[in-house]
Amino acid sequence: MEQRVSLITLGVADLERALDFYTALGWESNWTDGDVAFFQAGGMVFALWGRDKLAEDSMVEDPGGWGGITLAHNVRSPAEVDAVLDQVRAAGGDVRRDGAETPWGGYSGAFVDRDGHAWEVAHNPRWTIADDGSVSLG
Amino acid sequence: MEQRVSLITLGVADLERALDFYTALGWESNWTDGDVAFFQAGGMVFALWGRDKLAEDSMVEDPGGWGGITLAHNVRSPAEVDAVLDQVRAAGGDVRRDGAETPWGGYSGAFVDRDGHAWEVAHNPRWTIADDGSVSLG
Image (tube, rainbow over all chains, first blue to last red; front, top):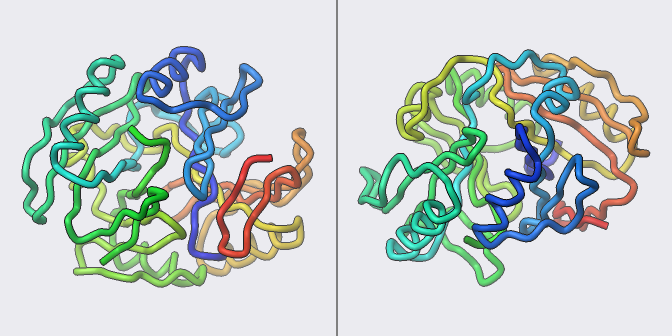
């Protein structure tokens, strides 16, 4: 198994509401049939799909709530962290931790989307972000 | 907010056990301090961290179990799906759906890792996988 993730699918209660949120953040779905929506996200794909269908397809029970996975969006400066968190608020996201310096020497904030999926928005001065948005350790 | 995910962090009960699992699948951590482990995964980073710390950092309550996010690892053929699922079994993962043809014209199986995180292993003949492993829609 190669060391990579090809697709992240977030289960959602209402595809249109979820699409509205990510669209308000500046994302644009590359393909949707009204049931699932795909976004090309760098060298991988990000998807939104009904949470009940995703649970069934994943062969898991769904107790509801958060499940131990958090996504992060890294940016190039602390000011950009704050700007993204402002966008999140304007899009109806729930910012739970304002941008602030972190114990690991960076700057970050945290939000949850309209379906309770957790995101961190971070500037890590030790990681490199290329022009195409790809992130490299060290 | 640019259309990309920089980091996926999976909350785990025991970092060493989780590292053993992903290492048995052929992955190699690029950095760890015994508390968190980072893997360079194409143009993004994949991380393992204590689930309680991740919940606290993400400002969420954790009801336990699956939380509506499934990851997928796409490969280049149905045979490769079966080969990865064999690797997963050998690594102590729980294969819950054997490789089989799907309604969308592909071939996939599903497993959960030792912490209950759900993965699909898939061949989608309509998606392109480049030599570097990056995936493109259409």
